[in-house]
Image (cartoon, rainbow, N blue to C red; front, side):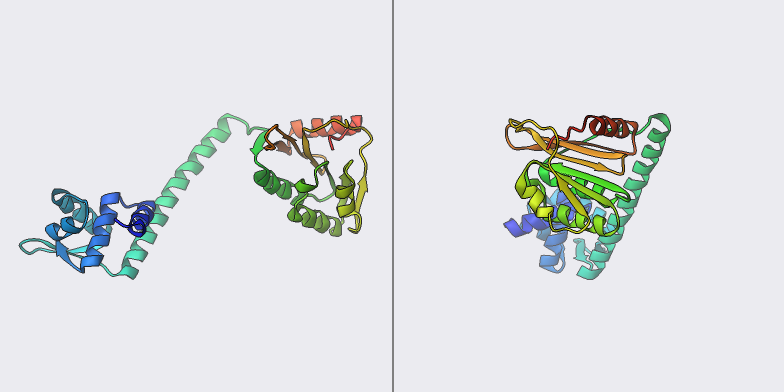
Amino acid sequence: MTDDENAAVDAFEGLGLTSYEAKVFIALHRLGAGTARDVAEITDVPRSQVYSVAESLEEHGLIEVQQSNPIRYRPVDIEEARNTLQRRFEREQDRAFEYVDAVRDEAAGEESQEDIWTVRGSERVDDRAVDLLSEATEKIVFGTRLPELVTDEIERTLAERAAAGVSVQVVSRTDAVRARFGDLEGVTTEVPPFYREDDQRSGRFIVVDEDSLLLSVIDDDGQETAIWSSGSLFASVLIQLVEAGKEVPT
């Protein structure tokens, strides 16, 4: 098979067909119509297997069978096949997620949700940071020593929250970080009162509305890992400790 045909088979498998079903379906579209022998000659599906595969495709509504001698098969048109597979995919999707919802509900009755979550990789930390910042209604404290951890989306979100009346404070020992926010109306910047000059581990620090927190570190390979918590006892206690100590790792 060509690379394109392999890709098509993979795609059909993603829609719920088996590899053999996908190959027979494609072969019949290439032939227009044909017998099991015709299909076996242009695919790697054994002739003995074509019959059962064709029966399955007929049950799916993807081919029609002519009761002749030998039996001939004809695929339904592309649009009909597309609609059939789409409906099947949606049914399977609904069935899968209905089960997951049921399992989740059962678990919720037995065990409380975790308070602390871990996120690895700067892009995923970016996404979580923006999510937390977007939910702020009263106060944001954002800190980092690294300019590259202040993405355009984070800057835009901080500006939007400040424009909405949220108190936004950016804390950093790095001039470039503070300068980036210097002209944003409603955003205040300051140098942390305490920090270690040799700190090469801290990433970013976010406090939102006194009940949500994100704290990240950078490992030796430059990989960022963050812990975050929202609406939990852990978050509120840690925020109180940080604010009481006035020590922000930025």
